[in-house]
Image (cartoon, rainbow, N blue to C red; front, side, top):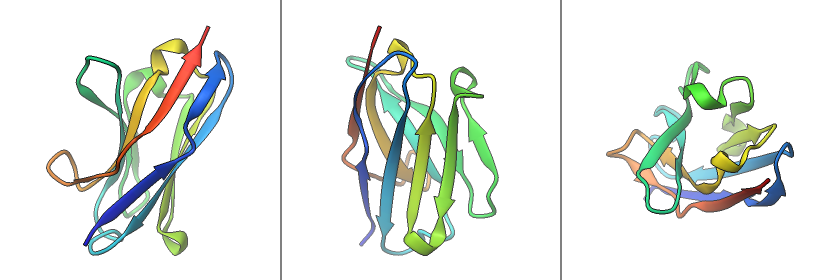
Length: 114
């Protein structure tokens, strides 16, 4: 049974920072890609960042240089450090294991006010 539990969301002002955490449990967690996706109200769930088991990372263009994804395999945890937050970063952030057809957490709300 694969389980993903996100935490760390909140309400901040533009320019501030937040760190999201995703604790993973179950099979495949050490071998599959883990990603973060954002869903703004009424919109699709959009890709934000991902990290592969070999440490490679990928980001959507509008967060490059501001967000950092990292992975602590000993703690089965993936982090998303979000700096210089903007109002357009607002949304529910979901942790994902194995791509869009894989497993999802319940999401954590991030609200950035101007």
